[in-house]
Each structure stands twice: as C-alpha cells, then as structure tokens.
Image 1: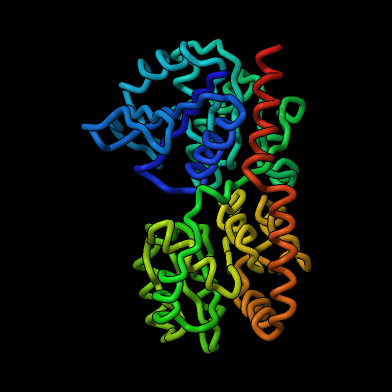
Image 2: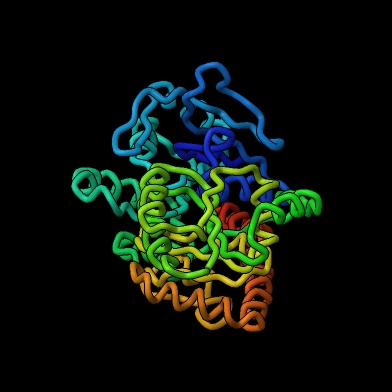
Amino acid sequence: MKVLHFYRTYYPDSFGGVEQVIRQLVTATAQQGVTAEVLTLTRDKQRLDIEFEGHKVHRAPLNFEIASTGFSWGAFAKFKQLAAQADIIHYHFPWPFMDMAHFLCRIKKPSVVTYHSDIVRQKRLLKIYQPLQNSFLKRVDKIVATSPNYMASSETLQAFRDKTEVITYGLERSIYPKHDSALCAAWQAKLPPKFFLFVGMLRYYKGLHVLLEAVAGSDLPVIILGDGPEEQALKVQARHLGLQNVQFVGALSDADKAALLTLCYGLVFPSHLRSEAFGITLLEAAMYGKPMISCEIGTGTSFVNRDGETGLLVPPSQPAALRKAMQILWDQPELALQYGKNAQQRFEALFTAQVMAQKYVALYQTLLKA
C-alpha cells in the first residue's frame, strides 16, 4: 500500500505539531507495510526531493503566501504525478491551496483528511474560502477528527458527522533521543532544581502572556522552550513585569528538549484559543510521565490532560486560576507524582504511534475495498 501525505510544511523546514504527526504516521505505518511519501512546499530552491528518516519528501518551490497559506505553481504538476502513483491520498487540513489542488488535479484516488484544526483567526477570509472548504470536505472519502472533544465542538465537522471518525494522535518513543545523563547534568547546572516547563512555538494562541502574568510576584520558576512570532513581545512583557523566575531558552535540538522534559517538575500549557486543537507537547509530557496544567478550551488538550487525573485544567485567560493550579502542584509533590504516573499510563493505553497507525491502516484498507 502506497500513501501520499500532502501538507504545506514538513521536516526539515518546519517542526510544528502537524509535521510531527505526519512524521509519526509515516514511521509507524511503515512497520505495518505502508510505503508513505510526503509532498510539501519549501523555500529551498536547490533540494526539492530529499530523504528524511528513511522516507521520501517531495518539495515544490513556495511562490508566495496569503494569510499563512502557501501557494506553489509547481506543486500542481508534482501532486498530479505523485497522486497517480499512490493508492491513498492523505490530506492534512487546513490548507486552502490543498483543496484547490485536489479539484484542479482531478484527483480520483481514495482520499482521507486528517482535520487538525478549524480556521480560527482569519474570520473574513474564511467566509470567502468556506464554499471551497465545504466542497473539498464533501468530496473526500473520509474525515478524521483528532479527539472526541474537537469532534463535538467543531461547527464545521458537525456537517460531516456521517463520514467522520476519531483517531487520536500518537507518538513513537524510539524516535526521541535516548536519555543522556551528561546532557541532563549540563542543563541541571544552568536551571533551578525544580521548574515548570513550556514547550512550543511562541504563537498568539499559546497564552504565554497569561503565564507571565500568572507567575509575576511569585517564586514559581518557568522555562520557556521555543521561538516564534511572539518571542520579542513576550520578552518585553517579562522585563516590564520584572520577572526573574522566567527563562527563555529559545528553540533547541530534540536532544535538549528531551533533557528538559526529563528534568522538569511539570508541564504548563496555557493555550487559550481553539487554534490549539490538540497539543502534541501534552503528549510528550505524558510520555515522560509529567503532570500537566492546561486550559479548558473545548479541544483535544482536555482529552489528553484529564482534570484531577493527569493534571489540572483551568479556565483560559485567567492568570489567577493558572497561578493557583501551579501552586497546588508545586506544594504537593506526591500529587504531582501521581498525576505524572497516571499521564504515562494513559499515554501507553491511548496515545502511542502504534495505536494511531493501526487505526489509520484499517481505515486505508476500508477505503481500498470500497
């Protein structure tokens, strides 16, 4: 079985949550006999076809972007060629250019869409795009929601309930760097002996401005791992608040991230808008057996982090509530330890890459038999 994944960005150009999911899917389904390739866009005009971790990545030159949507004239011919060689086309939504390519290239192969997120921020453009979006979702054979929470709360998905099923994300632990005691020791020497960790791109919906307000005037130490468009504004805010207990460590390698996940006391994940549809970082924290604090925003974040079981949930955009939750975990190490153990057990039962891959392969086989 040959599957073609199609999404706007991918490794090694970009390291976001959707890219991680595709990477995990390709790796895990390969163990079940699936040959998967990825088609994406790139700013690199020199290396268009590359190999990444044993699978082929085909890259079309990015020509321009509108509202974070990449367009590529060369992608149309490339997509048509690769689709003709594939058994299944696996789209990753949202990406309006992808919808256009599906129709303009007259794709007839069995198709599945992983619905990663609603379009949240671009309300005006959504009104223009909505007819194309709905036509695309109507035309594909199957839609996959990534959590029962998102399935229940997405207005868009409600119109396609009869063709939508839930398959949650999963991670393969072996892809992550093995424990490096020397690296952990080097980081421990630079950091507080006990700290909360945030991991992710510094984007508008991550709620980090709320986190900074929450820890102002406290002794709660926070390490912020990642970079992104909000980085400078957040650093300015931290200076204005006089925060000595917050460190920005920037974007780090996978090995460094693994070290900080190993060392941290717990994960704080203050995303406050529905643009945060799932939170791969929460899965990573659960995999490492860490207690979590996140916001109830009606998405998959609350499916991963169960209030009172794997961590604590707080209302979004409320610094006092976030600070209170952090203080509860900080003051009760036995509770934090139990939440971390529960999170790891829940991860092993529901969120491994093998579980995700088995469900997708079964779906692929159903589509091929239809």
